[in-house]
Length: 128
Image (cartoon, helix red, strand yellow):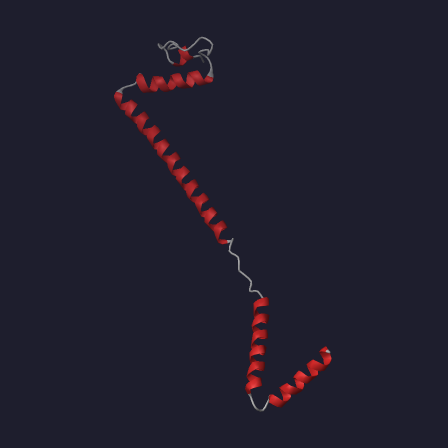
């Protein structure tokens, strides 16, 4: 089953002696060389067409795999959305300001003047 047996009249074509003519890889290469160069032209064209079809099939498979990977990345981006929470402290400050404004308006009202005086008197007696 050596290279010379598979290809009847072809010698070892200058391969280094260390490789050995009987190795599987070398015999495979020699068979392909024999098919490409030692057959009529019509057979050579058929071999080339077969190899091109195999390459096109492999390229299509690679493109399909790449498209699938891109779709997975898009799904991961959609999951990363977060919502912001509102602060409660600002609302309390606004309420205090509203109360102060109401008191100021009451001071100008003639109906509430007596009540405001009583409140002021109480605060004065408590503080002293």
